[in-house]
Length: 114
Length: 115
Image (tube, rainbow over all chains, first blue to last red; front, side, top):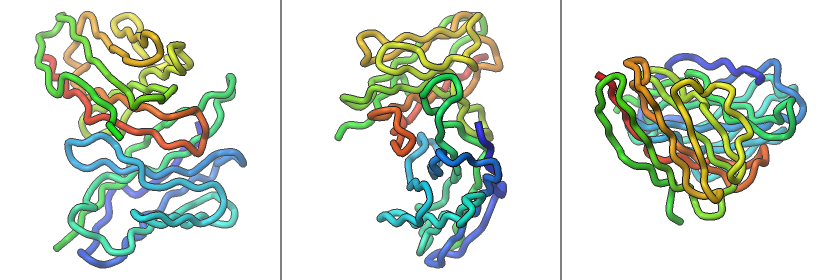
């Protein structure tokens, strides 16, 4: 599986935008970029995904570099409820025959300061 | 829409005992995943089902872990016998299809403590 690299932790002030970076220099042309987040004592929760173009939804925006080797998850106004571990994941086709894994790294722990 | 249901939420057992976890995925979801999450780490995929067939169990310790998905719906994960290092949260997830653009939905997990 192609790997992703994220900072271990980040801080943000409440009500300010947050930009969470992810490097994925070995991404293949068919890999989707997914972001999940995990609040304390909860299972991971889907945030957003994209392939080549930037994406927006009610939770966040995803900015994908033109060469696709990096991406940034943007939370437009951080709230205390956004404090979580954010995982950047590449979802692609397995070499052995067509199924897609969802493989997590360590993620970025986001702390939101009131 | 009901989410992924898991039970029990918490379990404490002694080493060398057996334990089983149950998962009910979202209705109609063909793909089911079991993950192990050790404290401070990201979830690690143990096994992935497509309907009731296994498509990936490469990281499942098969000498002590087993999983099944009868009739392509509910699934159980069993550990027999448990070791201290099995203490972790066991997460079940499901997705509608296997598409790369498809999101996975997670349950709240079962926290296992082996003493």
